[in-house]
Image 1 (cartoon, rainbow, N blue to C red):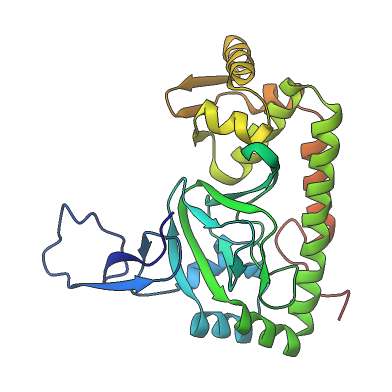
Image 2 (image 1 turned 45 degrees about the vertical axis):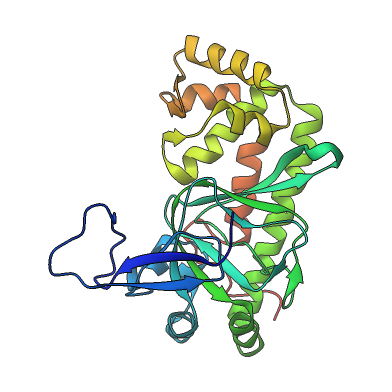
Length: 287
């Protein structure tokens, strides 16, 4: 996606459709060196901290630092947050149902999803210390709001906050566990179980109605579209999902759990042990 795109926003803090201007609202344009298409003029809201399980653990002083140095952004579905080899200067905290896929690439242009990040975590510089080139490609698979915080700000905050150092240390362990489990799952489990696992994880983050093409799902699972077509048809025949153009809707979570491998539950349990189910981790550990 092209950088330095002109975007427009409303000063009332709401993303608007320029084809339908609102009376009584002033508009302005700005230029962002960031792959998003909207940003809210009012910036970060207090409720945003409850919409991400890492941010929810931030004490008031850390929240004020994020408000001062960060900004609220809108990530469009299909947009690229960063590409492989690109120098990362901001950390992104997805809010609510916003979800980003980290994809590993090989020769010939093929890729496969190594991890997906939603409101439980963050991408970009959380594991590394300071600016560093990205190894994977990050694509938005479920659109929505996110908080973008310059890494320099987070590095300063980490130097002063044992809570933040410990929280990011624990989150790094969780992210590594998700990637390791993904490697094992891709190597040993049949595509039907892998697809069910992926759909369950997507539902955890974005809800039961997924704006997703079968092409995109096939790419993230590293298989041919014909393979995903057959799997989707089978799941639909069993009454577990409905498949329409660009949309997969989950009808039976219990049925998908029965079809899935144990990898979904293993990763979720590890997150609970490292961060806490309610986002209350970070109180003890590596300082």
